[in-house]
Length: 291
Image 1: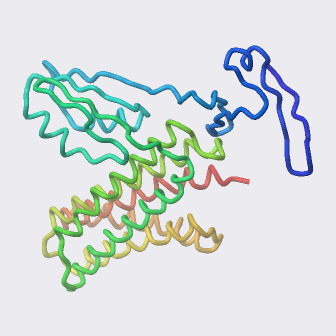
Image 2 (image 1 turned 135 degrees about the vertical axis):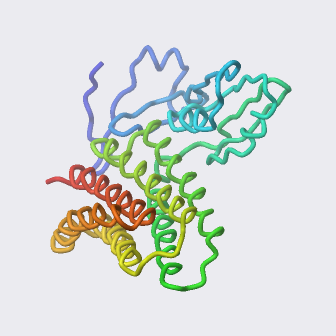
Image 3 (image 1 turned 180 degrees about the vertical axis):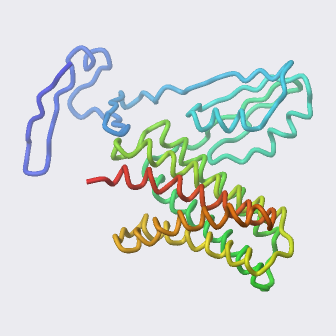
């Protein structure tokens, strides 16, 4: 149903509530209602009513179990997941799962229940996305320092990938549940958050496969890492000149990577993938900021 918006004061706009809904929920003067923002939508709830919980069952009996099933359901926006299993080793895998706000609340010999114990708030998205950027930059810099002869604890550096996973899937969950405050940007931010997770995966693979490389390949990695830093600067403070330089470098680095992969091996391969992943996120950024 359509409702006219009434201007109550200079900065206050009001819309009336449907009489049927008001009567059904016993709303009267002074009652409190819950108003939830979901992108361009507003959801109004009775003050005593909580948003409906989304629940599902993951039956792993007779199928290969992968922890990503749970991560995917978390991203999709479920509040409670019951996992049925016949193999007790699956419970050990479930205990390793580290998702923001999700905890095991019930456990038995052939099932467990994990549940959201804290509400995902839309205003947390920007903070968590910046955290994804900063963790990617920190991993990339640590690898660069190591290749330049500095002392770096690679095992500790590798752990940052887990932290990035946790932050990025939380961003994806928020976007799926609530959208972004500017709903037109939701899809593009989803791609950016997902690709930042992929970039940290590439850094993890580089750490796992680290070896002595030629100066030529080390320089190529440094150029790839610098490309990520450039995009971070552009994302948070757009500059036409810097974007042109960033854009031109992508093509040069992809061509250089193709040549190095033929002769120099694994680090060149990973760095080429890094450059391609960075290329994949500038498109959504440009589109959502197009004027």
